[in-house]
Amino acid sequence: MRIKICGITQIEDALICEKEGANALGFIFYAGSKRYIAPTQVKEIISKLGPFIDKVGVFVNESVENINQIIDECGLTMVQLHGEEAHDQIKNIDVPVIKGFRVDNNFNYNQLHEYRECFFLLDAYSKAEYGGSGKSFNWQDIPVSMRSKIILAGGISVDNLEQIFTEIKPAAIDLSSSIEISPGKKDHGKVKELFAEYRKLLTL
Image (cartoon, helix red, strand yellow):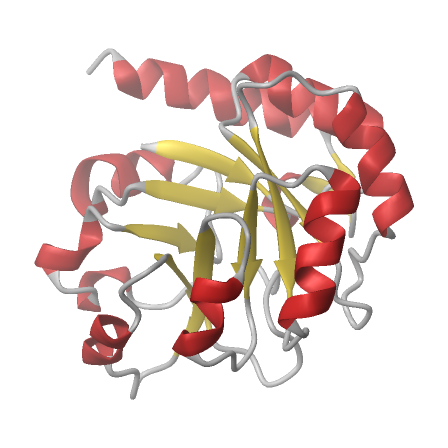
C-alpha cells in the first residue's frame, strides 16, 4: 500500500513527507481550493525533491492544454482529475492520470469500467468542495475485486490506518486534512506518527 500526501503548499512540508517515506505528493491547482498553490511555487518545491517520489498535479475541470502546460512548467510526473472530466480527455494528457470520483450512497462502481487509461481515486462526496473534506464513505461498499486497484481518500488518519491496511487493502491511500495544522500546512508530528504506524503495519 502506497501513500500520497496531498495539499502540499510549503517546501518544508514536502521535504518531511519525502523523508518519512511518502510515495507521492499532491499539489492542488484548483483556485477554489483552500490548498491552492501557484505553478511557480510548485516548480520551486519540485526542484528540491528527489527523482523517486511522484509529483501529482490536482486539477478540476481544467482544459487539457492548460494541464499539459503546467506539467511541462512544473515537472509533474502524474495528474489527478477531480472534476467532471470525460474519459476521452485522459488519453491526451502527457503523464499518467488518476481520475477522482466522489462517492455517495448511490455511487455506481460500474462506471469505473468506462475509464480504461487511468488509476482511480475514491473520495467522499461533498456538496461544498471537490475534495479534502476529511470525511469518509462506507469503504466496505467498494467491490472486493476493485480494492487493490484504487487509491482511497477521505477521513484517513493514523486511527484507522490498520483497518485500511488489513481489511480494505487499497493500492494506495491519500491523506491531507488529518495531518494538517491548517489547510495547506502540515503538522510534522502527525506526519511522523502516520509513517511510524505505517512502518509498524508492514511488519505484521
